[in-house]
Image (cartoon, rainbow, N blue to C red; front, side, top):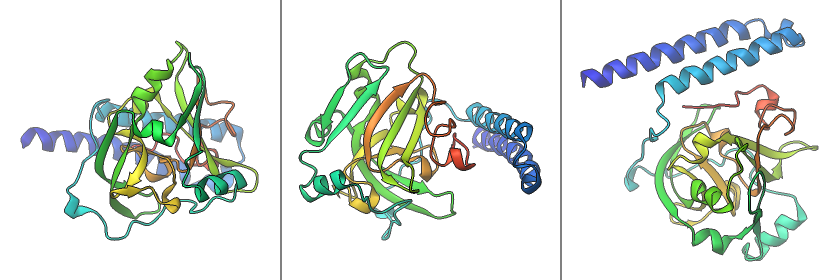
Length: 257
């Protein structure tokens, strides 16, 4: 017990210190947000936050898992809840039997996986808490294919560094949703491509037919409606170059809990 209290105290000290630095920066955002030097400083601050979290989070540490009795009666869908893309609509009306997940980029064997093929791959079931940056949380049961074995099956090239998720939904007129994670999170045991929620097929508002569950990060990292996975050396060419839809709009790319 003493050791755990010490660990939590150290974690709180580091993360609160990083948060305090961020708060000091944000206080002048209105006046400085257009300054290139200020943007560079924010980028460095984000890197410090990620570094601080990496000090207290083991690469193998697991997000807490819960009992069936803890599952939330209502689980609010995060982000978008529908997709207007005609190809997606046709696939959903057919139960996604003809839907395919495409994997490309820095892999030895680019290819496609049907939903049935994904269901036959090594899977994991976990009951975890979804924490939204808006301040709400909910507990759900997820089942899906572990991302690590999928990446091993297609063969990562030596310069592969990040996994980018291209999605079917749009939160703005010009851009489909996109997200990325590094290889540490990609190969974590709890990182899955979920096709079931609470014992049933993943509902459309929650990202059917496939969504990312990266349980050690905040909800906006859990990309929904995944249609294409791209393996890259850098995410500088994705969107505005910050690695995800929300990071390009001021959120942190690394959203560790």
